Amino acid sequence: EFVEIPAEARTAIESELEKLASLEKNSAEFNVTRTYLDWLTDLPWDVSTPENYDVSRARHCLDANHYGLDDVKDIVLQFVAVGRLRGSVQGKILCLAGPPGVGKTSIAAGVAEALGRKFYRFSVGGLSDVSEIRGHRRTYVGAMPGKLIQCLKTTGTNNPLVLIDEVDKLGRGYQGDPASALLELLDPGQNSTFRDTYLDVPFDMSKVLFMCTANVLDTIPGPLLDRMEVVRLSGYDVPEKLAIAEKYLIPKSMLESGLREKLVEETSEAEEQEEGSDKSSATNSNPAPEAEPEPSPELYVTPEGVPPSLSIHTSSVESLVRWYCREAGVRSLEKHIQRICRKLALQVVAERENTPLPARTARQTDSWTVTDHNLDDYVGKPPFTTDRMFPDAPPHGVVMGLAWTSMGGSALYVEAQGIHRTADHEGRPRGGGKLEITGQLKDVMRESARIAHTVARSFLHRYQQGNSYYDDHDLHVHVPDGATPKDGPSAGVTLVTAMLGLALDRPVRSDLAMTGEVSLSGLVLPVGGIKEKVMAARRAGIACIIFPEQNRRDYEELPDYLKEGLEVHFAQDYKTVFEVAFCEDDLFDK
Image (tube, rainbow, N blue to C red):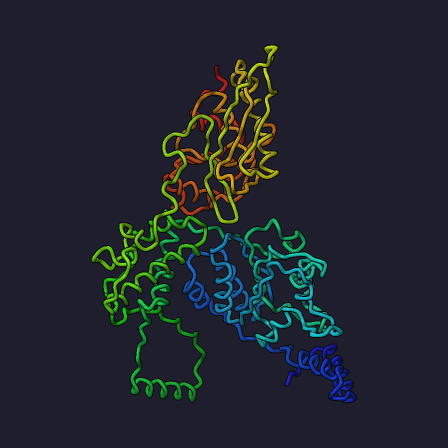
């Protein structure tokens, strides 16, 4: 029996009970009223799940299944510490933003386990009906409450952890705007009186911990984004992917393929009796409560019939990360490891049953260890064969830039080519210094290219006043991988450098990559995604990087192993970029 039902809800229940008593059981209104009463009485108005306020145990739960993600873990531990001091944790709204496959959805389940809360997930990707959030009116046939009220009934508690997945892909249709419906729900100052359209009575949502996931933040409406605390998750670099594969992906895939099994420790009857006597004595003496012991790590053994030497060597994982799986997350890496394990399982069963296999499926060596030498026998030829489009020094007018996408960081080339103007039949030059832009560049990047063209012409006039290259040639700028749309202002300095290299007939450094927005006056403006861009540069074998001066703090916050061996320059204006790119130390001193 619920004794803490709010007054308004209690009044609604009593009113509906009086109405139900006067209705015929065969009438349609009877079933509608009965269903409405079922929802009102099944909701956990005053039922809360006891929470965990042990910081060490919460940390162990988070580290058990997730590597890295320190920012999210620190915030969760802060919640636990606040709950330890105050005795309760009020609901918060977190938004985990990052590329696919970095663990945004799975870490939410780990957070719920660490806090001791019930977990409920629903996706709003493509959702265009506001009734899915706020519920239907009871006058409609088949009317139901919204997802949030359904969540409370399913979990049976008023303080669950609710994960709203793919919040950046919310739709909008004639049924309303779901993003606007989420404004009240995700506002800590308003959700204490959240009113579902079906229930038509307020419910206190302030104890619910909301977590949202998104790949990009640009598509989230500003008022909705303002209500959430954003935690950015960058992609994993090579050492992190190796650690994740060794600790989580390979054991999990081996277990699912039957190549490993968990070690179950059997407890003798004497130990069980002794444990029971200890519990009874502890109950009688009423000792002080102790923290729950941390769970021991899971151990795996090789099943009978599987060769003990069967394993996946670290060198093969390194090859997978470098030549097969270059995305920011580990989803593709997990698929490749699962593919290897399935093929190993087939080979084990085939040899056990003496079943012949096709040449491409059978084992090519006597070893059961997968290394970088026989990796292609299990996953095929690598899709990536080189780190760069130009293995040696790039030609004149070609510069490598660094970009951030929803899939993580990437290194891309900017190519500039001049087209000499021919004379017409009267001897006058054709053309007028036109700029042609190709490579699926969107509006922002096309504007950046036009700004770069103006900056390059101005810079060339100051550097070499007699150089008339831009007056004698039209320019064609192309960014390869033309099937992929590209946008953003961070290629400004790269575009200027490519155009100047063409006009000066000089190549840039072969180990150089750069990023930064350029203004019309030549200032280098800050950009985002510094960690992802550094990882992309290291993956491409780059030793020298140019960043905007205002991104110095972002670079200094990176781990030391990412900065090791890199020559980094920070530019306030384009003059610094030019000096580094063309090794020009005495600029304008001629």
